[in-house]
Image (cartoon, rainbow, N blue to C red):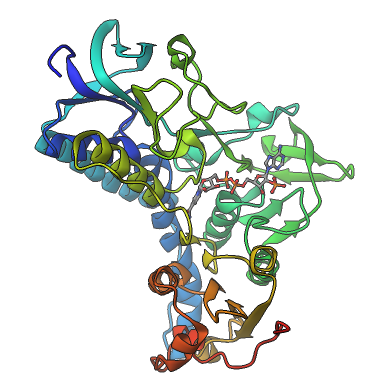
Length: 456
Ligand code: NDP
């Protein structure tokens, strides 16, 4: 391997890039990773981690109100946005340091600067060329804001993490993960929040019951949701320099901030992949096979840049496959079935397996179990928050195909059920499992009456 400067050169020190580099380093490979921005990528800096911290912050407001039902008197709570941002930034700085240490500990060389691909085995970083037996592209994605008149006045989630002041009124555009999460965050922090979505139902990619139920809960918590609506232009010119968003029905919404959460595109522009002959999809995603190998055998790609599932744990798993196959015992691939996910809206959404519609397409005859109820905690708070829980079961084999939930800590709860689904658990086994009382989770093992029954 010595004819190359490195055995592996990774472009991008985000979740996937760092994991592959570290693991390859541990396996004895000579590894370098280049990063032009921040260590830890989207997840650590402008994604999962700061978002979850903001989500906790937003929940406190509601919790303080709820506490009154339990006898707590908390007079006039106030919220200080700069304190939250500063504390969040401190935690991110700590994590950036942890990432640097992890790389150094695995003997990985970190090169600060933008890397571009020159050819199948050469990368250029800040004017310096280095050669590598393998190149791994792990450059992630970047928010996409549709090009409407005035779109430069809008922000994406990237900027939302660094707003100098909390807006009084916000419009959030989109109906996916980031839109519902940020609408919940802003609303929980006391911002008058309107969600504008072009479609019929939030979270369109998920089980059809989830988006509708979530929308109801979000509205109950004070958000305004405008479905089947598109912003056609944004102007400055509202009162006190506020923004004016003109919708397709000609109505005008005034806000201090318009945030687009309309998807993220793979980060491949200007990376030089075309020079090396790497094939990409129309949206710039690197096309890879089941081993994450691109059309150029020495170039691999993992994570958001391949645009399969834009989730940190998926990028980590993909990275492990690449490192293990290149420098370990090999023969690894990734099973994309049954990947659980959570959306940290308020309330949370947790889901694993097939939606009712997908299950019906694939298995035909299915049973559906569903319940919604007010959890015990809220019997004293009077908040009126409801929980939705749903199981989708293959009628013939009795195997549980999907577990879906809207409710507190749905992600925490669904993670365990994801293991059960990986093991092929049947509804009978769910029923034979004793519940933990009183919890919300116990409902998943006590659902007895199917609301929709298959034929066989
Ligand atoms: P999503 O793909 O989840 O949602 C994008 C939304 O924007 C959809 O509702 C889509 O509508 C809408 N949209 C797309 N284009 C336009 C347009 N031109 N005008 C109006 N609306 C439009 O993307 P996000 O940006 O929310 O998040 C990106 C990815 O990041 C997610 O898919 C997820 O993989 C990951 N993520 C994961 C999180 C987690 O694990 N908790 C949290 C945040 C992000 P339509 O449905 O009609 O196409």
